[in-house]
Length: 165
Image 1 (cartoon, one colour):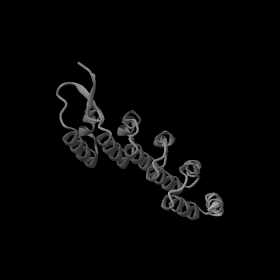
Image 2 (cartoon, helix red, strand yellow):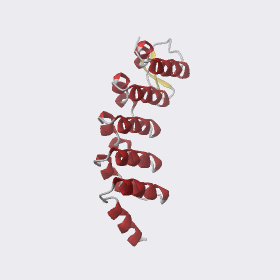
Image 3 (tube, one colour):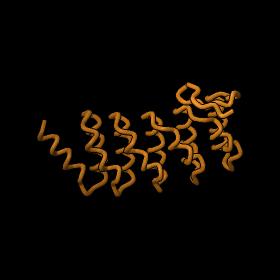
Image 4 (tube, one colour):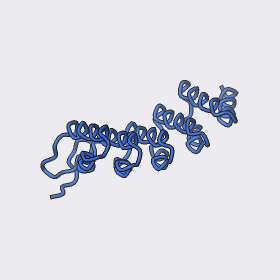
């Protein structure tokens, strides 16, 4: 098995991005070491970075390694990072700034993450006036799913934790 591990580690350094992405999938299927994947979060190819993010989620990796990718310029990577933070139960505070991102799909993913992380509805309300109808639609769904908060409290994982009154 040690020989297989050496081959896999070496393939993660292959010059071809398809080979690197495929190797990531092999690591996931073998339930390999998530630590081998972390360096690929900085890969030059955005597709490899997305594959690495998804693998980290599949292997239950460290959400802290994902946070820097929330500021990624490539929307595909940013969206994958948003979804990963939600899936790994990260801190919703990292998601709030993305509710005002330039790209529509990034804003929509951020709304979905706020729902998954049971974030503060007041962060969603401004999106009811978003210029994009799909973002407004996502905002309405989020408000319906999280429910009205008429007592002025912030929800965090289903518990009232901070009273703003």
